[in-house]
Image (cartoon, rainbow, N blue to C red):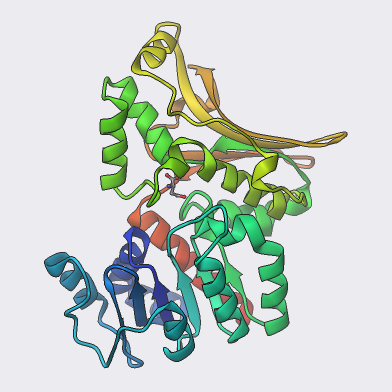
Length: 344
Ligand code: HSE
C-alpha cells in the first residue's frame, strides 16, 4: 500500500468536494489501486489552517465546516500555518493547490506551486492561473526535481479532457479544439432561456459551486480563454497567452436576445476555439447562436463539451461536467492516480 500525504491549500468548493471523495472512496482507492490518501494539512485564508502529520479526519473537517463555517475551532496539533509554512512543514508528498484563480499574475498559487516543486513535492492543481501563465517553466522545474504536476481539473473539471488529449490524441495530430468550456455561463444561458434573469441565474451558479471566486472571470470569458490557452499550448504545441485570444463574454446577452434566438430555433452558447492555420493560429471565446441541429445545442446546464479535430481520427467529442464540487474534486483524484502510475 502506498500512502500519499496531501496538503490542501484553499478549502472552498473543490477542497471540500475532494475531502468528501476521500472520506467515501478511500477503501475503493486502496482496493483497486493500492493507494491510501491522508490529508495532513488544510490551509485556507479565511477558514483557518490546521495540520496533523498523522492525518486529519476528513469527516471531522466537513462536519466542523458545516457547523461553524470554518476550521478555527477544529482540534489539531498545529494551527495557524500560512500556505508556505504548510508546504514546508506539513510533511506532505503532494500539494493540492486549490487557491483562487488570478489570471493576471497566477499568484498566490504560482508561489505555492514553485515552493512545493522546489521541495520535491508533486503538485495537483485545479487553479488555472499558474497553468495558463507559466506552465512551461513549472513543467521544467518539475522535471528537474523529478516530480509531477497534475492539471486535469483546469479544463472541464473531472471530465478527462487533458488526459485524453495528452495521453491519447496528441499523436493523432490535433489541428483544432472547440467547445463549451465554461460551466457557469452555459448554466446561466440555459436558465435565462427558461425565463430566469441573468443576476438570479448567476447567484444560483455561485451557490451551486460552479462560478469562480470572482465570477467576472466566468461571465466575461476569461476563464474559457484561459482554458483555450491551456489546451492550445499543451495539446497543439502553440505558445498562446491570454492576449492572443479574441474574447467576448455573455454579460451583454439579454433575456430578449435569448428569446429572439429561440423564436428562430437557435441557442446562444459561449464557444471557445483554437485552430491551426497556415499563418499560425486563430483563437477565440465568444457567444455564438447555434441552430437546434448543431452538436453543441444539446449541451445543457453545467455540462461542457470539447471536440478535438485530428489529422488521423477526424473529430472526437467528449461531453461531461465542466464544474462542480465533487466533479472538480474528482479531477484531483485523477491527478493522484496518474502521479501514482507514473511514479511506479
Ligand atoms: N468557473 C468554472 C466554470 C469552473 O464555471 O466552468 C471550472 O473551471
